[in-house]
Image (cartoon, rainbow, N blue to C red; front, side):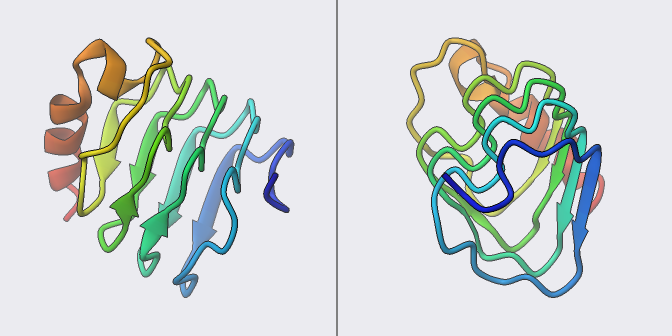
Length: 110
């Protein structure tokens, strides 16, 4: 898993980060609520897997990948280039049908 996984971050802000190299970069960060990376280009597979308190992701230049929000039950706002990815967790915005609303909420920050 990624080098930043299993941490107790509440919020993360990267001003210059562009690529995420590995999958599951923020896997199982149970306290993470806010993620901002304005230059980021990609949210890799399983990027926020099991970040159960994650509410807001602001990555206006990033494409989403498979299961990047798996088990992110509290997410309400996503600012990203793409919202088309596969997931079968039954607990994320993609699986519960709220992804479009999350993306609409994210546009307010564009």
